[in-house]
Length: 221
Image 1 (cartoon, one colour):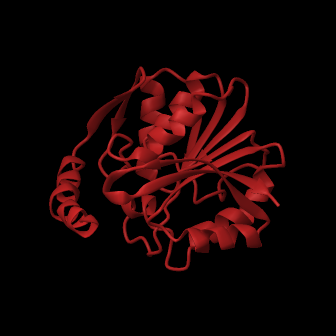
Image 2 (tube, helix red, strand yellow):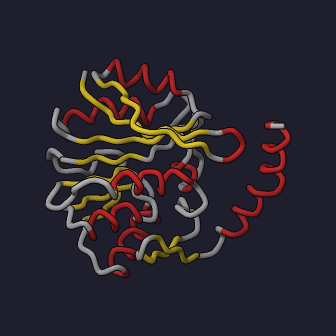
């Protein structure tokens, strides 16, 4: 049954998503109205962004230094800015950064969004919150849009992330990351442990076709 549902997804849903996302689209979430540009991860079609937002709604973000690493459309960053967090947002995709800047203006919030491959263009500072909705499939990205999905054949994204993360966090930082049942959780966890971090499961959520999303707190060993 699971194989049949995934087959239907490949022949119906995925082609539909690709067709729908060729054009600029509008999306609204909890009083926040955003535009999603073609090629940018759409928060309405996938559960991960809303899963993170459900968790952040329960947190006190006011006055906190908040980093969204891989901001996409910027919905999470706009939400955090509305909660009076001091928001920095970055993405390797120029289109995603422009999309986040557009949505910040549209929602009249202040945040600092810029293009960066992980921390390469960041100024050194310690963040109170680091939120990561990463690319987690082991394949080399070929296009700008694919950077939202693929982390490199040898998990290069995660190797660089956990190597650099200590320079932007401390033991008091709240670092959260979402992963899915369909990715190689053991390989990603192994990379984190080699760099002095462990995953602490916060919550999990069933999604389509027997898949499951996991929200983790990332902590120092």
